Length: 150
Image (cartoon, rainbow, N blue to C red):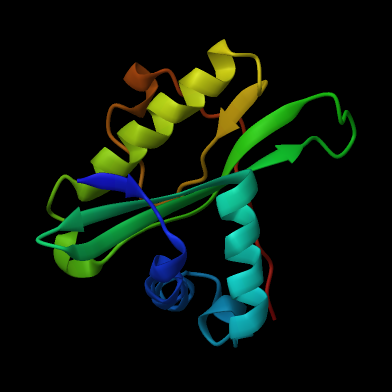
């Protein structure tokens, strides 16, 4: 089941954000310390201005997809629904939970596009983990991100 997060889900979302951070290939994020109050405030803001989707099985949260409505920095008349974090707990990676989160994000994003509330919806994936068949869902790759660390 996919559902929107509620305020009482925030501790579980924070736990997944910590796991998300530790699993990144970016070293400086693996050891980053979250300020729980700041993260809680940011998540409440996202719930108000974007979305936090949760996947669930047997009353257990198995994953999340967080997205925010943002204006383009240079052309503020352009607005995007931008995915900020997409995470499925490792023990549920061989299930359909990640795909179901993406499908719901895709559905909500298309509603925003059709209603002209956004110009585009955005999704970021790891370079070494492409999503099979994503182009068939209407997505296209437009750029690649690079990170330099010391």
